[in-house]
Length: 183
Image 1 (cartoon, helix red, strand yellow):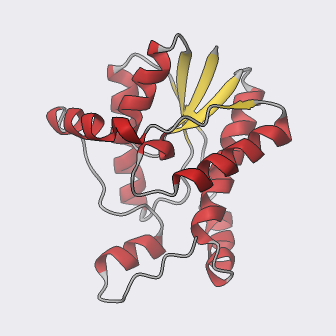
Image 2: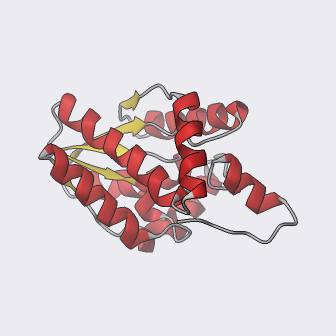
Image 3: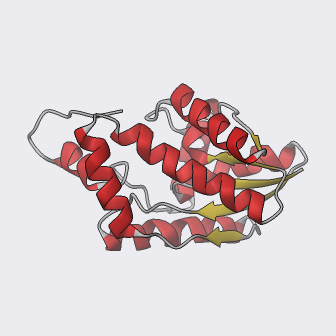
């Protein structure tokens, strides 16, 4: 089956890409992450993801971000206490739309590899996005693959980010303010 894999970053793409391929799927990547700020961080993560897909000989589709629209939506979602879920939904809805437009049978996301994300919420959001467009969402729990992927990414010298991506997550990670993650 032809699968589009939404990639949140390079290190998290390694294991899902390999696992989906070993299951017999033809896998291509999608970079759509308007949540990542500042722009220098966005570029650094994009370059790392591009490198990973390059060394795995897989195509990486790049969906240009609309940062202004994203920031407006993110601010509203933060006020409503739905920041993370909204961010996941926007990105997975885009992944579903690109997958359908480009003729993929299914899509998945590397967000499902991280033990730092809310796996069940992401799977629920992915399924809903897929259902809206009549496409399959592969909701596999890739978290057991995280340690091996992290080890391989370190051996490859890949850049590892230390916050999720948005300005709020950067603030929560590096400020003295008690984190107030709004999912």
